[in-house]
Length: 373
Image (tube, rainbow, N blue to C red; front, top):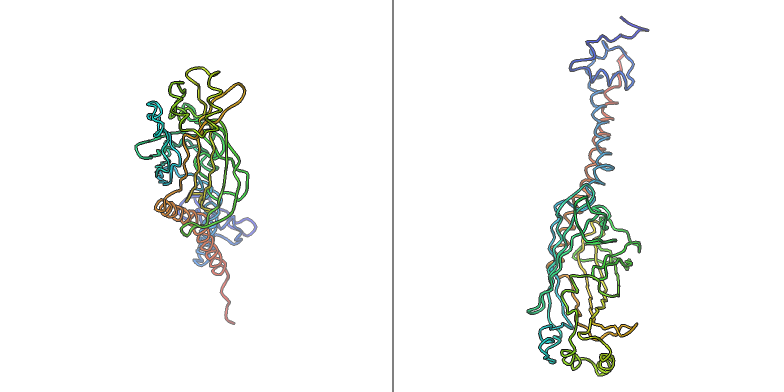
């Protein structure tokens, strides 16, 4: 039956291979009878081209605005090894101190290496459980540390851990900068030795091994609160051992300590003061740390009344990421940047262009042929 000159669809027309095309024809707005449509292959193909073109454009938008944010975060399989090299300007020899060997209490200008690994242990949606380990080697001395953080995979800032997972309480940037890090001063950096986050300053832009980088700096001072670090140094100093330390101290410091030591308990409780500066070269596109300059100093001190008296540095190190590790990090940044560009730019553009081409072809094929007189 025809209603107002149009073919009325029967139930059979809503099923079968031609149903999708029939629906597209009906609702896209081609107002001509289905009998005419089915008898005209050119018009039928134009609707197919139109439908496929729209789908491709939609897929391009999905890739750009849905898929891209989903992949612009810390990869679930992250497992990074970075090597530093540098110098321990001062290094306490705890064994020599205990044995009263004044001339061997401190080692000076000792070459050091630091091996650091960052590994994602678990992923819980947008939260990653990350283990950050490092071992400093200076001659026969090894100072290992191991920390576990819960990190927001997008912002790279410490966050609440998943239920049932134990991590180190932290805030701010814990292991590295995020993808497309901002060039401003709003970040904070977690300093484990102080158990506190300190402000980060955006210093400048630079290049490292062909990659454009943002340079961020941070500085901090305070009393050491990290139990793992404190365990690496003597908690107390017996007065019988103090003589060896006095002989190794500058004259002015030794005099002040000698005068105050009479009123101090035996053994003398020690506290430790920490000072650090960190300069990080983070890839502008991916946030990967390509280079980093570290300066760390730990100073032994005693409390005399309400005053803290610094005695001597027990650790003073300066280190940079080695050139080989810089190259490896730059290569990782380049690979990650290519993948991000593919997902966020190349694929959406290709899909959009193909979709537009099909839409144009659909319009061209839809136009009726000009009849010769």
